[in-house]
Image 1 (cartoon, one colour):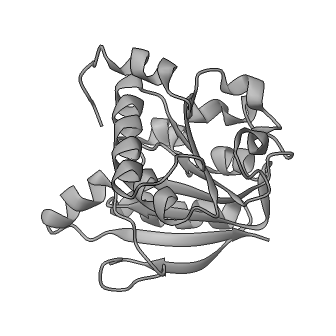
Image 2: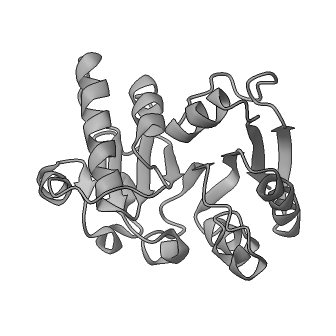
Image 3: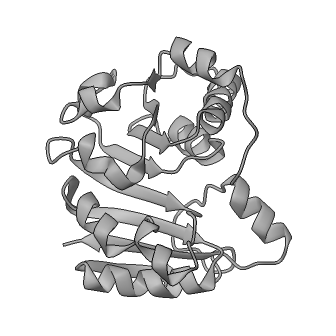
Length: 220
């Protein structure tokens, strides 16, 4: 999603206690950032405006969350969404952190000591041209990186509106040894999760009548 430059985003992020500007320095010790480091750790890759992470983190205080994006403007909006959601619920922001980084290089900021129990990939860029497929966040090259810090029996939750990306991702998971335990071609009619937290893309596509595809994969 393209978004206009927001001059307030960088100063607000730098002043935020739950934003990290130097994620490389936290490699191998992410859990120590949180108030309750013993809690499970979940990771959202490409958090966008933060609708998803603000909802799920504020309703699951027993889980710690890291949300990553590459664009300051997106992260600025995510920060505000998180703040507003927690304020409405009169909650302390203690179980979520946002950071700016290129997900393609994620092994520069995470390793096996970080032990992530679940990864969320929501409506990532489908990169439809064949020569760009390696840039997909579900490409085997990326999945092999995630496996370095994903716990045994750790999960990957994936949602998309794109038919080709979904079918190809099923193949990517099989090639990478990640077992697909649930899938649906119409998430809003066939739920595969106890509660579905919508992203801004999901709401938009659903309103256009586009069916949401989703799957859950497990690292065995």
